[in-house]
Length: 130
Image (cartoon, rainbow, N blue to C red; front, top):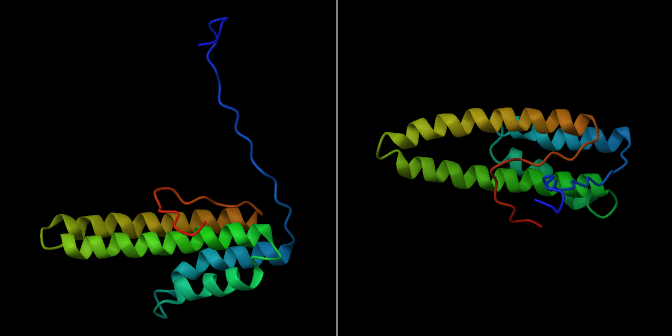
């Protein structure tokens, strides 16, 4: 509490990143590449990696989006490996279902944010690529 007994509020500052439609489309493609992984193995990691490596120097939006999607894919891989290990006991299979549903929802939320030109921060992930 401050001197006048009013609660102290945290100030949230969001950086505004201007994007053009091409950047938004590539960001959208980064997030939706998650679904390509169901058809082509590792496409969900390779597609955002290629986009990020090509555009990280020229677009702050794609740099942030690419890092976030790659961190999401790495975290998802770690979570699924943990689920496989835990499937020895029944909880691993149940946890895998929860992780799968959450990852689909998060990928769609990321795609919607990218289509608006916003950088989406995936919740509950390890941010290994900074």
